Each structure stands twice: as structure tokens, then as C-alpha cells.
Image (cartoon, rainbow, N blue to C red; front, side):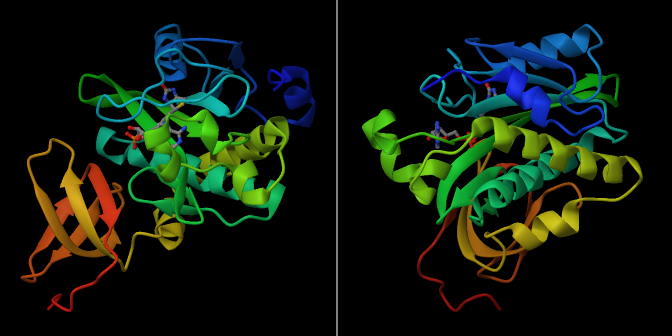
Length: 270
Ligand code: BT5
């Protein structure tokens, strides 16, 4: 696999500012860490950090993100959105929608989203998002949205235990895909939605409509591992929280956690 062709990306790019400030690394520890460091140096809104390999790619809750070199998209976008900290998940929504659309646009495949931060193809994880916040006092100073998208990965390149849980765009399509074209389409989609957000529009309705999770009977493990339950994934709200209807009828709001779709849906939602 060839390294990312940054010149080609720049030639394809149609954005005004998203991705125009671009830091490419053949190898770094984590693009999210680099983007946070750049935030401290006043890097512009929409700065893109992109790597062909990461030595310490991060998932949520201390988990790892794995990717063979020169194969996938590993990137972080730095934003200074006009949002409160509790609204910062809207940037996750913006990027998740743009990522799903870029895959659809370039390949014709139809990715779905899974609460809170997964991209799925054929029901299997093809990408994940890790959003991190920087605070100034009680205000949101910046948001870093890290995206790992499996583009040309063959499942055999992952450790055995991950193979049943992961797929890639190429795997689903049956042929390799231009990472440069996907990236340019993604950045364009981000800019359109970020501009709308800055104009006061929330991406929540569009995000909710794309969530495979809603209307499903799911098992939820809350982020701190303190709570686990099954219920109907009823809705999401403007902050990206999931509202779960438990078997006894109680509603719970879950801000962060992991969701597993249950095959059987007990008839006990009322
Ligand atoms: C995520 O976490 O899905 C967020 C992943 C974000 C990665 C990007 S890469 C660029 C940027 N820089 C970073 O350092 N991170 C971001 P989570 O929901 O916690 O899922 C992590 C879990 O997904 C792992 O524990 C594995 O089970 C699984 N996993 C790891 N690598 C994978 C891959 N390539 N494809 C599918 N699943 C994977």
C-alpha cells in the first residue's frame, strides 16, 4: 500500500477552510494527541491532522485503535465551535454524518451509524470516532474529533479476536478505494455541516435518522461500568445522549457507554 498522496488530496479539496491547514505524519502516536497539542498553539479552525500509522491509536475509555500502515484513514479535526461543553457531541454528529456520506458518495455503499460513535457497513464496525474536549474554565475551548475509518483493510490484517467485529470499505465493496477521494469528500461534508452548525442549525435530527440503534432492543453498558441494562433505544437528544426505555417502563438517559444490539426483543416495553 502506498502512503497517502497529500498533493492529490490538496488538488481534490474544495473546502474553504476545513482541512486547509493540514499536518501529515507517516507515523505518529495518536492524531488526537497531536491535534490537542496544536490547539494549544492556536492552530486554525478546521485543522486536519492525518497519519498513515499510529503507534498509540486511541479508542474511547482507554481502548486501542489498530490499523496497519498506509491502509486506512486515521485523522483528527480541530474545531473551535460556538457550543457549550455539553453540546460538543454535535461535532461528533457532524463528522459521523460526513464520514458516512463520503463513503456513500465515493462507493455507493450505505453506511449506518451506531450510538454513540461507530460507523457500520453491513452491520459491522467500519469506523469509530473519539471526540475530546478542551475546556477554558467552564467554557468549551476546542473540540478534537478523531476518526478511524477502515478503507483498504483486509480483515486478516487485524488480530484474530477483532476480525469478526471489523470490516472495511474495500472489504464490503470488493475492490480498493481511493483514500484521497474519500478524504476530500469527507472534508467537504464536514465543512457544509459545520457551517450550518455555526449558523445555529443542529445536526441532531439528521444524525438520529441515520442511527441503526434507534427502535432496537439493546444492552447498554454505561461508560464507568457502573450500570448495565437492557431496553428499547427510544431516542437521542441534542447532547447526543441516548434515552433507553427499560422493561419496567422507566426511562434512562445515557450520556456515554456501549451498546450491543440484542437479537431477541422481549415484548416487555410497556
Ligand atoms: C472508537 O473507540 O471507535 C474510536 C476510535 C477512534 C480512532 C481514531 S484514529 C485517529 C484518531 N487518533 C486516535 O488516537 N484515535 C482516533 P471505541 O468505541 O472505544 O472502540 C475501540 C474498539 O474498537 C477496540 O477496543 C477494538 O475492539 C475495536 N477496534 C480497534 N481497532 C479497530 C479497527 N481498525 N476496526 C474496527 N474495530 C476496531
